[in-house]
Image (cartoon, rainbow, N blue to C red; front, side, top):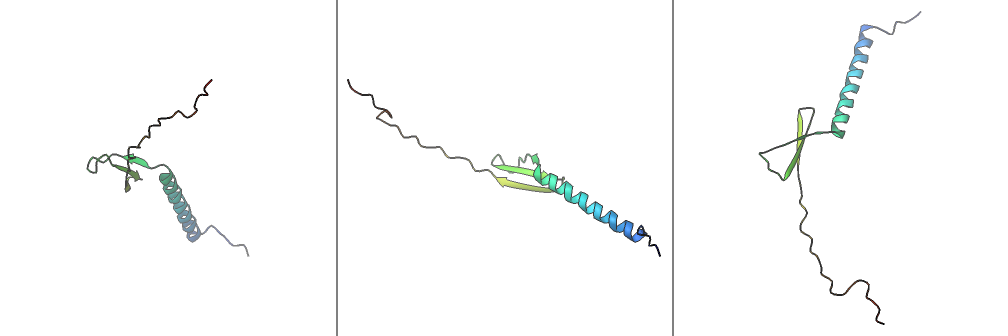
Length: 82
């Protein structure tokens, strides 16, 4: 006896699996390329990004401190005296 695999129950199951796969793909692309958002309330030390207009994450930027420079009194390659 031949069995019909394309029943309404199976079609709904396949549609649900395809929908979940599409949502997972959109979420993965959004994580790879988030949309930058400017937030005036937090100030310039914060960087925010938004995923799919719903999920917003903010991270605090660390600024590099001024590096101290050591002044060398002797040249790196001393000249030979003749």
